[in-house]
Image (cartoon, rainbow over all chains, first blue to last red; front, side, top):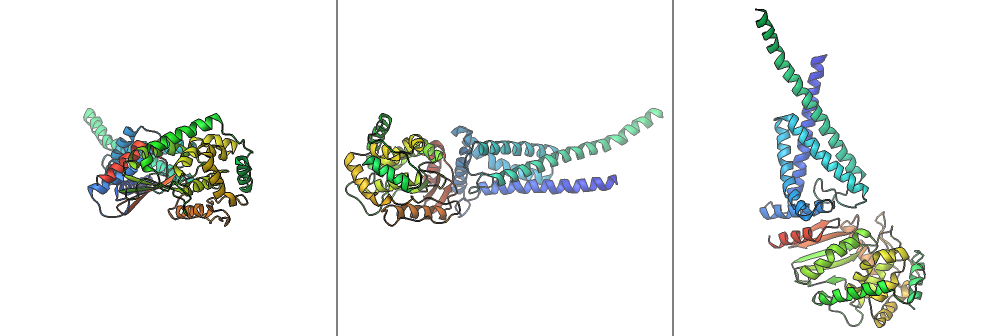
Length: 177
Length: 251
């Protein structure tokens, strides 16, 4: 029963992790791809990031300098996070970073929606309006990230407990001997 | 005469515009004066058709051969459009449009939710037929809060023009008093253009172009450079927009 639960948990964690990885890879791709069609080049990437900067700016939250910093940093970081999640290395940490990032996005979106800003979400490139559906989608993504984070930490602790259990038995045996 | 035009246009639009005074307020005159000063500075960027009444309204500012074309779909009553005009478009006109880097094209997209936006668009198109678009455009945005509150669009348009020009504008809009001004619909259906109103068909054409983008909110702008289009559906600061233009120009 416990082994079955553990197996199901592992599968769910794997699915959640891959889903989050896919979301971040798609988000990074959508922001960096040539925005008006055409071929990939350094020039097209610069235009795409400059266009993403306008989307960040439309949230009316950051100064132009901060907008530039975020616009240049965020898409490559999303790509990195997607690959990190895909690799499964240090999953509790990557899932925690994902949850914090999605939490920040969600809070910003809720704030802008409550302010009545009629803007693009900018989540997956241009042309997607910020509204109840985008809030629902991003809220679901945040819930998934939190679930994966909790699951990853739970698995990590369980594994750590399993590793330490035989060691403490040896110590007990040694002491008895 | 001014009051008569305002009242008739307001009532005809179903907006219930309040009766107006025939003289512009001090605030209105001051703002219009500053608008005229600003317009003089950018004389090079102004449309050439200043004399007479052209067949089609010229709502474009700058050099048509500029490398970048920026089409703005705007609603005179929308607060975001007002902020975008004041904080971004004005600086754009004074710099990149005046320098010949950007050709600015205004499209009317008066939203159904706004009471006087259609009337404002009629004034703007009428003024554009006379080559006075830039003055009236600026006056409408500069005084947006005032006429949105009072419904007295006419006062601020009149203050932005000479009495002779305003009389000419009244003549252009004479046939517009019997029907509501066209506005973009929530269901994307085409609004009707009054055949007796000489400017309605141009507003409807703009709305049709907006549906094609598609414009989901105002302001929406479309930047065209080297045949590629980049739509953006929100107001952005001048610094960030300028950086986008610079990125395009250095490509």
